[in-house]
Length: 195
Length: 165
Image (cartoon, rainbow over all chains, first blue to last red; front, side, top):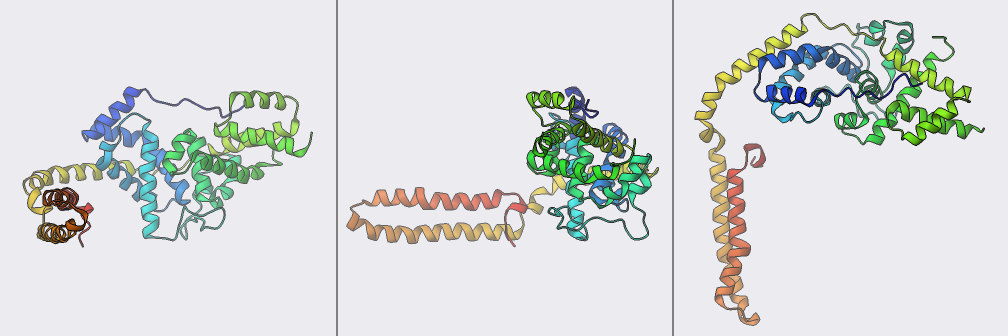
């Protein structure tokens, strides 16, 4: 019935312990594997935060450098992704504070929405590979970053609400509400169209 | 069935998709969906949005991985080159003249303040019938030791926690 059921998705504890040990020891091989494994997801998450592609590569690099620097604080008791995304989010927020043209703290429509840099197409229009994605692209671009972030983390990263809550530093109820509102904004884009 | 009734089930659909619905509610939702076309349509539209999100595929710069790995290797080399020097000179760099001066001022103020307090307390012992040893103990326990501890904490704290301009 529900296409998107909760997936366990949790790696074996030994995997996370291995990552934690590798980060603590600054093991180059472990870091290389992590970069290979999580690079696309990191890019996708940062695009969802910024709503643009420009500048994301620099943030990705900055994130991995921070992962190496602070790797000792990942203890391997939980999945690696939430920790990685939290690191990336903190760096993104620092960047936004330094260049305050974007803000994630837009409260229910009152804030500044992200837009691609001048001359750059919408990353969602460029990334749409299906008809439904094409229909959703504009709405995704103009969606409040906090809603877009919640949707991406829940439905593309398959993270639980608790994990998202840790990443965004907001209560579970707030995260749930962002997901509902995000879905409510996107749903009309596909209404009246047959799949 | 009224509108509110459907809205409550549609809220349950949202909760299910978000992963926060209880088993009992999910069961009642399943039963409702078997008979309600509008809620079934709501679920179908929601699932379609979620599936639509998977239709975005971002292109990753093909040189990004190499660039990141090069930056990581460079940082590792710089860290390992800097580490022995940092270890050798850790004390002189972390305990600056400013901290020594702040520590000396804090210790002097502890001693001078304790002496003043002792004099005042001794003056007050007469009306409240304390003897000299009790005053000395009071000053030691409640004034001199805490202020000296604070001075040592200042000295031992990490640089960024000292709060010295």
